[in-house]
Image 1 (cartoon, one colour):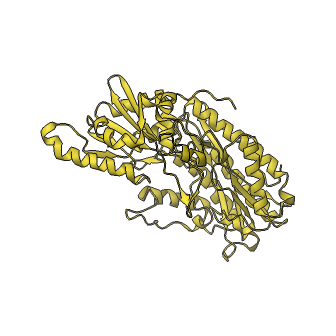
Image 2 (cartoon, rainbow, N blue to C red; image 1 turned 135 degrees about the horizontal axis):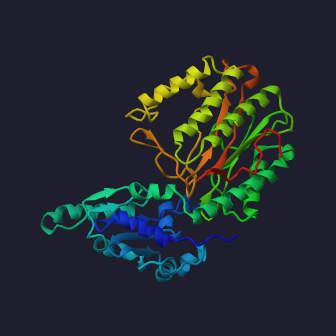
Image 3 (cartoon, rainbow, N blue to C red; image 1 turned 180 degrees about the horizontal axis):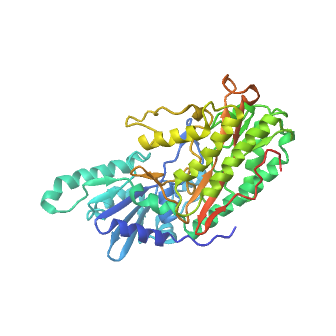
Length: 453
C-alpha cells in the first residue's frame, strides 16, 4: 500500500524548537516482553520514538537535542549478533540503521552509558519517560541528573530536572499530519471492509471465537499488520462488559452481537464497533435500544467541528442517550433535569475523580452509560493528548482524530430495568477526522444498523 513519506526530520525540528538549547530528549524503545521461560510476545514500538525517528528497533535509544541550527539526532542501537539473529531474524548494524533514519550519528547501545552524559551536558532539563519499562536507561538518566545537581553550582552546567516527554510531544501528536492521516485512512478502510466481510458469516459462526478469527484474518489478508487491540466479540449479556475479551461463548441466534475491533496499518490504528442481530431479526426492545444509540452516535458526529469542544461532543451524545433512557424506562428522572444535574456535577468536579484518585459520586444513569463518548486515535488506540486544560474542555482543531462511541449497557441482573432490556449491550463506534469545514467520518461507509449488512 502506497503512503506519503514520513517526514520525521520535520517533527524533530519542531521538537527542537521546544527544547531550545537548554533541553535534551532521551527516548528509549519499548521493552521486549517475554512470558513463561522464553516466549517472546510480538514487539510493540514506542510511539514517541517512532513518531520522531521512525525507529522500530528493540533496545534502541534516541537522543535529540536542540541548537541554533535545529535538531541533532543521535541513535544507539543493537549490534549485529549472528547467534541472536539466527533465532529472531536479521538486524541492521547501528551505523546502517542510523543512516536509514537520518541520524547525525549512531553508536552501539553498549556505548550509551559512556556517551550520554556528554550528549546532554548542556541541558537544564532532560525529557525522559520515567517508569516506562527501561530501568537500564532510567538509571543512567537519574545518575546524570544527580551528578548535575552536585556540579552545577561551580560549573553552571548540567541537567537538574526530568520532565515527561508528553509535555512537548502530546500536543504535536494530537494534530495529525498528512502522512499520519493517510495511514489512519488506510487502517479505517481495511477495518470497514473486514467488518462487512465478517458480517456475512456471523449467522453461521456458532461462537464468538469464530467471529474473532474471521475479522482478524480479514485484517491481515488486506495488508494490516494485525488487530490494533484485543478484539471484543461479545454475544448477548457479554456485551454489557465494556472490555470483554474472553470471546469463548456460543452465539444465540435470537440475540445480539457486539463486535469491537480495528486494524493496524504501519503502526496507526482504527477502532470500530457495531452491534448486530445474530439471526437477522430483532425484538422491539432491541430495535428501540439500538435506535437510541444510533441517535446519540449521529448527534455526536454532527457536533464535531473546529471550535467545538470534546465536552460538547460528549454532551450531544449524552443528551440523546438520556432522552432515550427516559423513553425506554431506564431513567426515572426527567432527561433535561438529569442532563442539567450532570453539567453542574462536572462544573464542581471537572475530572470525575477527586484528589485521591477515587471516583466521585456518579448519577444513576451512569450504570447504563459509564464512559465518555470519545477518545483520541493515532499511534496508540487511546492516543495521547489532554481532554481538558485548567478545567476547560479541549477545543477541536483540524487534524485531530477521535472516536465517537456512545453505548447502552443493561446488566442482566438489573432488576430496575424493564425485563426485555436486561442483558442487552449496544455500542456504535466510528473514527472521525476534524477537517476545516466540519468532520470526515473515516469509517462511515459501514452501516450502523442492527441488521447485518
